[in-house]
Amino acid sequence: MLKRVWVLTPEERAHRQLVRTRRQIVNHRSDVMRQIKSLLLFHGIEIPFSNRKQWSSAFIKWLHDLDFGNEYLNRSLKALVDLYDYLSEEKKRLTHEVIELAREDKYASRVKFLKSIPGIGALSAMEILVELQYISRFQSADELAAYLGLTPAQYSSGERIRMGHITHTGNTRVRTTLIESSWILIGKDPEMRWKYENLKQRRGGKRAIVAIARILSARIRRMLLDQVSYQIDFQNVA
Image 1 (cartoon, rainbow, N blue to C red):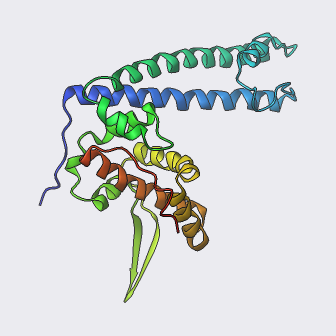
Image 2: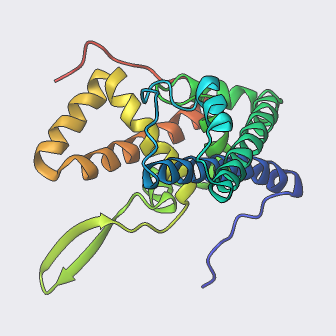
């Protein structure tokens, strides 16, 4: 009657925490970036950099040198820019540590397999691996999809059954990583692109990319179980 719970070792929990902390720092840094731009916009400061060059070293220097002509506004901006600098350094340090962790025997071969998927690099591979750890604990692709919250909600009324949006339960971190990676994947894998476009016509873009992420999760499960790399079939495209 009790639902089985997978218990990580202390080492695995520590690895997962490192990767999660890096993601939290990245998200916090993005929040600060938005706050800085909002402050400039609110006070009518035009940014003399294109979107492509924003957050470059030249842009950060410009922020440090910017003078509002008001000491309180200058202090506010300095606090945000200093925080951005600090978070950038922490992101760099944690990224290096996660990359080093990915090279350890426990993860190296699995990271190599996952990196063969277009859209997945060492960092996203580690985000997947530290959350899932042993892929063999999922008895089927459907069980993994349910764990990730990639299963559509089901609504029943009499004899009618309607499939809605995904449940949004399960592991948000891996689900987000897979959806982000799926956007790149459909640009590299013709078969997945065809599946996406076909689904998009019937269900819309958002549902289509979630469906691609679900297919990708099933492929990842199979790859890790069979210990094989991702294969793109350029010939068998409808």
